[in-house]
Image 1 (cartoon, rainbow, N blue to C red):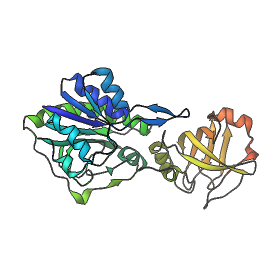
Image 2: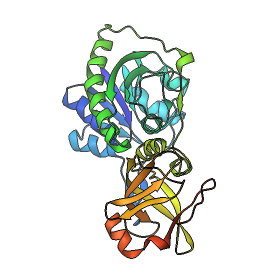
Image 3: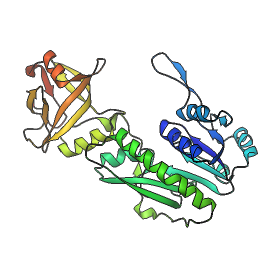
Image 4: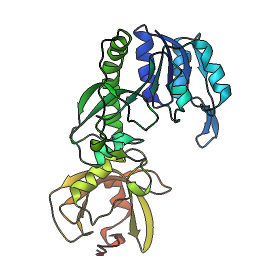
Length: 320
């Protein structure tokens, strides 16, 4: 079974490595072009390209700007692939490409479909307070994440998990699930299961606005939001410090059952800054003023006294 693998980030790279080590015939790897990144504006290779090159230098690596061009079709056809395996590649597949491999195109999606179709299933499941998610291996069709499901594996979400933690667990589950699914698929031993479109939900890409903490929300919802947006793009809020409004990234927080007026600071010491929400409160343990280094609360309170700080929001704007 000849496979062309499509993927880009580290998540994809780990799965590619697993498939190669388990002996699957990866005849080519398709990934995104190298990009200029970082403060030094250096050209960086995608993680999948680095991984493929480090494992087997004979694997052909293709980096198209777009996969919907005749030039790309011509570059991929000579491999005569039986299957395309797609893991977080980053481009939409045109119909012609979907029809190219003999067995079809298979995608790894990090949710239990049809829930959380779309770009950010990991982040959105955390933000919604889910206690369970998983991985689905499915056939690809023109409609986003709507293809028949070949296999699934459930993954519990523990209360302390953030998006990075959950990504690691889902990567492990993907490796456990994908290889046996591909083998059974090649042997004709899988009956695909159609998704019920009535049960479908969508996970839109998480933006900076989605990561803004609003203290008028219940503390438990804020904690879910924090976990889903950490470490990227990073939860944040505006704080008034010495009469000036500054943007602050919230790096570590925990739920607190204490209550008070919305935006009221309930405690301000080395153990944390506890801020009241519409219900319960959250305790901030580490934060970063925009343009400065991250500080533990014990460091932060040495530089700013309680009278210097005010948490504000459109709804609750109590000043300390």
